[in-house]
Structure formats: structure tokens, C-alpha cells
Image 1 (tube, rainbow, N blue to C red):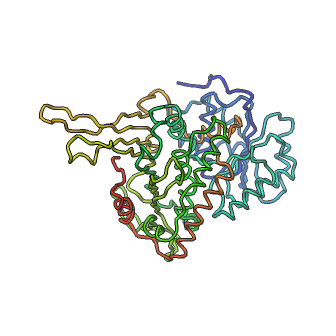
Image 2: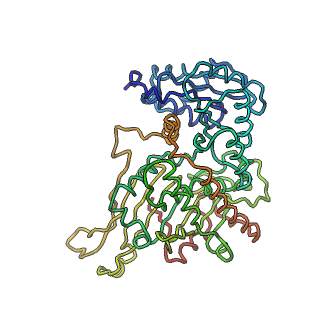
Image 3: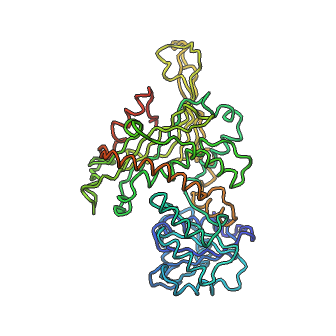
Length: 497
């Protein structure tokens, strides 16, 4: 059904969007489809304009053709309609620009002349030139007091480089107008996690060390490095995934209730969690953290190379492609509750999920051989399908079963529960919140820096120990040591996928 006649969004949220890196992979794969969906759903005000900026020589007509091709490649057929596509493409303009030099930025100021809309500057480029772009925009008088800037992770390589990048952005923009994206925070399930925790007394009263035995967070990637050797080998899985995605999920699980849903109220509570994260020192570096690196194996029945055999590889690299760890949040709510984190490349499945394991009843009256299953689990799935399931125990049916227990889920699958609703991509929600000027889904500077402090001490410990990463076959769930790490606590990774 065409949505070309849907009423367009609140005119108060109209913007001029200057998208730096408009021909890059992120823009074509994620940003333009997200912007198209906002327009098609009637959430983009009529006067909103989009300027694509890149170094390549194109005119606006050629740029629109490139974006049109990218959209038709990535959108489902039922999501495409001619009127919506034409309306969206008509918003687009193109400017060839060398981002690092001041020459040419006057064209942005001229594009903005007479506009009463706020400008959003989206930096879909390498973090090392964030500062150059911000300074050049300021020098060309292209900015005003309503201009917002959106920056992608990773913000830095460590705390020092993060501070340098944030200082450069902060010299031009106040914190209230800086939007640091972690796209996991835009996922529907992550939003539902806030509602689940703070709107339901059932969970609100149980969300502490008296009732929860441990927490698992898994972010598994099926792919390898996908041609990103140069970037990934400098970063590694800890910097690429743990420092932002996994720690953000941990914060949302562990934070205390905010006083309200204002951006700073939520982010204040997340910072408290990061400050309370137990550091890895001494023997904990050996038995509570596992680094891994994949070797040749199979994926979907096809042979795939090991990390050191990938194109352009440094065959002496000690960079980790897998990390598993046990950590704790040292506060009253979580004292003694381990958080098990696991992330890696070339895993058997693409999977992002959180599993909350509730404690068993203190007095057990059923079959002794079933005691191991006698607890509840809350499974929060972020991908591939978003949903929430609560595993409960019931009596197994049948006259010959006696009082045998059977685990089963109370399941909310978003695709099944809302069959007529399309689950929006995370970038759609994030871009909409930028248009509205709302920051609660974005990461504040002190969050970034406390996360880096925690990761930096772990990386320093690895370097001091000079222990190479453990090998694991591509297509497996990581090194055997990651299984031993949780097994030694009498537990196992939840793998009922």
C-alpha cells in the first residue's frame, strides 16, 4: 500500500541535514534507507533538505541516481513506491568537498542562507577528521546556535585519543548539541528493556542480587573481518565491540531507575555503572578474561580462512577476534552477581542477546535430578529477530509424568505480535530523535571516557602478560577456555537458539 499521501512530520522538527561521507558504505547501507523510511512513514517534515558531501566528482542528478540504486537494492519490494521514492530523492543535493581543508565550506553557508531550520551535521567519516570538519564549518560561518553534530563510533583508540577527538568537537559544539551514536541503543528491544524494567513491578522488585544469580550478554558475529583488516587489526574485538556495544547493554541492564526519562537522568545512571565496574588485575586477568583469534574452519558448510590468512593479513598479528569475560558491578544492587560478556567473529550464528538468570527457590520439593533446570530466565533478543521471552517451569503433561517439570517460554516475538507493523531499523529511531533534538539515546562524553578507562586497564594488563590469544576454529563458539571460565562457576552459556 502506497504511503505517498501520508501526512508529513511535525514542521517544528524540520532540519537541513549535511551528511559528510554521503557516498560511503554506512550512508548507502544504513542512513539513506533509514531517512527514506522516515519520509515514507510521514515522519520527515516537508521542508527538510539533505545535502550529501563527499570527495568524489558528481552532480546532484548523479548523486540521486546512486542513492536510488542503493535504496532499490536494500529495500523490500513492498517498501518501495514510486511517489515516496521521488519525493525523497527530490530532497537530495550534492556537494563535492575536501573535508580537511577550509576551501569550499562557504558553499555550505550559502546553502543555508535564509533557512530557519536547524542544521544537523552528520559525520559518517573517520574520527580523525571530526575536528577538521567542525573547525572548517565554524570558520566558514556555516553554524549557528541550533546546529547539532552527529558522530559515529569508535570515538578514539583509547582514553587519550578519545579525549583529543572529543576536545576537538567540544571546541565548536557544546555537549548539549553533540549526538554520539551507538546504534544498539536505537533497537526496539533495547527501548523495551527500559519499559520492561521500570514499568513492570514484577521485574522492578526482582532486579537485584537477592533474586538474580548471574547475567549473560552475547554479541556474536557470523562474518569475519569483511575486508576491514587495516581498521580491525589496530582495534581488535575489545575496542570494536566491548568498549561501546556490550558496555552500553550492561549499563542498561545494571543501572538504577532514573528519576525521569530525561537524557541526562538516564545517562547519569549509566555512568554510575561504568564507575562501579570491577577492574581486572592480577590473577583475574588469567582466569576471568579469555582472548581468542579464529583459525580456518567452516561457516554454513563452506571452508573459510583463519584470521591470519585473510587478505592483507599480518601473519604475526596478536589481535583478538574474540573476548569473553566475567566482571562485576561493585554496588549494593549487584554485589556478588557475575556478568558474563562474550563477543566474537566467525561464530556459528549472528546473535545478540541478554540472558537474566534468576535464583532458584531456597527450598526445592521436586525431582532431585531436575534441580538444574529449576530457575527462571529472561531472554532478551536483539538480533537476528527481536523479542523477549521469560522461561518458566510448568508440570509436564500426561498421566505417566508425575510431578515432572518442563521449561517453556512466555514469548513476545515482535514480528509475530505486531504482524502489520514493520520493526524500524535502529538508525530510523536515532535519526528521528536527532530531528527532535532529543539526546536520551545518545552517549554522553563521560560515558565514553569511563568505558575507555575500564578497557585501557584491561589492554594494559594483556600487554604486560604478553599472552597470545587462544585459537578457535571459525564456526565455533570460541576458545574452549571461554567455556571453562563459566563452567568453573557451575554454570554454562545459554545456547537454546
